[in-house]
Length: 357
Image: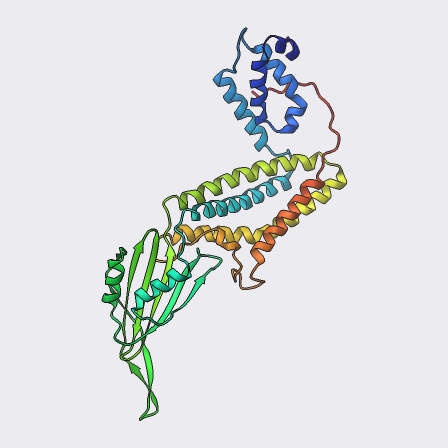
């Protein structure tokens, strides 16, 4: 019985089979799709309207194996697939990190930062505040306020507690200061009274530090968003998805290059080699950030994030601050050019049935 004859009786089963065959690569469906559907319909029971569960799982698994398979006797294809999978894993980790960071609490605006600095210092004088971005950490805030030597950490702690913040105990800090003795014209050590405490509220953590001499001092406030429980799992999921997608993409591209003309094959292979070299430094930076995100996970400092590697900054000691982002864009452009260049030529037709066992 042919697919056409069967479809006159019931096209439902054929449609289901064709949907399942989408698990196979396009090149496989173009060559063997009609024969596969015909054979499957001939094997179906009379009146059957849906594929059997075992049959459906077999087709899906067989299709996935075909998508993961690389061309035989192509060592460069294997190397390129491994490198591309690792690169896509790094980009997937960055995507998962970015998605996780979207669940973090928003940092306060400038007016709120000034209010927090005033609460920490107890002074009405203006503070110096800044927003800190880096290629390793999520954005944070930092303020500095000049105070007198009588600043009291316990009073600052009580101000935050009264405002609903969960505050820690006060911890002494080390430190040393020197001053000029006007009589002897020499530097002398000055006694210091330094301390710190933290405050948490609504997903934010503040670290208050005071450094005081007998008649002068400064109060520093650092703030950052707390990590969420799903942050690290999203990084792992992103890396795993990136690895699988990278391998699937590499396998599809490898067959595309193999089926291209010799001239296009050489040019596309060369472009892919350059693209992978360009993406190497960004991938190393992203995996480095992923390692830091797991190794230094906690709430004692701003959160290490994977995607922060794209933030302009001195990630590597050599090269411009924007090199990670620039190399990623350059690698993506070169990869796109390689894909367009590897346009397959005309393929021979075959009527051989190819149902994977």
